Every structure is written in C-alpha cells, then in structure tokens.
Length: 225
Image (cartoon, rainbow, N blue to C red; front, side):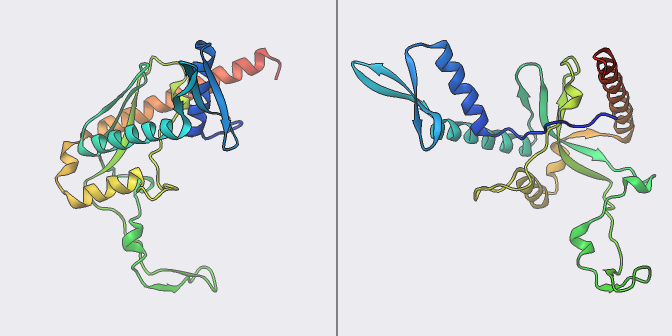
C-alpha cells in the first residue's frame, strides 16, 4: 500500500522564497536584504548609486492574494481558470447524486444537529441525535480540478479549496456555499456531471492508482527495498 511520506503544505511564503532565489540567481545586478527575520525579504537593484526596491515579500503576497481572490470569484460565477504548464482547469461542477448505495449518502449536518438528543440504547451514557437527516437533492456542487492526464504522476496531487482562513477574508468554500444559497439558479451555470460519468471517473481513478502503486513497488524492488 502506498502512503504519503514527508507531507508538507506549501504557502505563499514558500513561493516567495523560491521566486526570490530564482531572480537573484538569474540577475547579478539584484541583491536581497534580510528583514523581519526573513532571508531575502526584499530584493533591490542599485540605480544612480541608490538602492531601488524591485519587490518584497509583502508586495508579492498582495499580488498573489489579489489573483487568488479574482480567480475564486470567476470560478464561483461559473467560469473556468486555466492552469499553465498543461495542468488543466479549475472550475465548479454540478454532480448527479447517487442514491443507489448507502456509501454515497451524505449527512446534512446542519439539519441533523437541529434534531433533539436522546439516549443511545446501544451505548449506555451516550447521547445521539433522534434522527439523521440526509441530503435529498438530485445533485450537489463542488470545486473540481480537471487534470491533464499527460502530466506525469498527476494522480498523486489533489486540489482542496480552503475551509478556513487565518485572516478576516472568508474561505473559498464558504463563499461558494453562500453564493449557491443566495442564487438557486447559479448551479445551472456549472458543468454537469451525470452519474454515468461519475462512475467512469471512479473506475479511471482506480486504474490510475493501481498503476502508480505497481510503479512504486517496482522501483522499491529495483532498489532492493
């Protein structure tokens, strides 16, 4: 079984560190300055004998956040964002709900938590909700990454919209949900994925994961692990 090793979350700060290192390497007229405990916090060039600020982490972060906020609004409104490098697109889609299997049932926790609590007859001293409420809508919406299968090992990567934000700015999923609740017709602007395509995608993902596991196991065997 394959498992994630040395899992790391990359942030805007990591992007800046790599970007600063790259431009400093490619342009010998630039130099970095240590500030606020951060190496290469700002990048300068000498002009007429004076240091001129080219870019710093604060400005870089504002540019990235501005782009992300614009991209987020476009996706919520029903447009697709193209990812460079042949990585595919990120967009919202409307998926047909599968009621044939209990595994596919999704609990509506907002309504379930409004149910009264009662004693659990199976576990003494434990309380449970009187009833569990499930979603019964014929479809549901999500933010999806349509990957380009030509990219090596792209199945190992996933896109997860933010649930929370450290700043006062609301999260991607919260804005997405609020927009759908406000405009009941918005979902019809999203790409529709019928049940047949959902099943085909599951089978394709299953086969892709199997190929990756086989490839990893072969490399381990070749390396005597």
